[in-house]
Length: 87
Image (cartoon, rainbow, N blue to C red; front, side):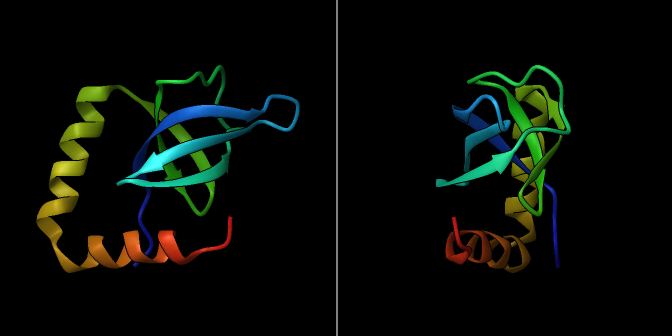
């Protein structure tokens, strides 16, 4: 299963190339933010295959994360795949 998961932007790594570091369930990864306007540290975004596809507010991100945690194994599998992927 491939999900779009909420992640919080923790650093703008490369402003020119629109790369940010996000925290996805405790895993930090660099992603492209080129598809989303005006992304800043602290923003929440939905991440799908290495791209931020939409900004979301913190409340929506928390609700989504809670729902994903309730899915159990599929969510754990997705986090494992993210943690094992190349940076």
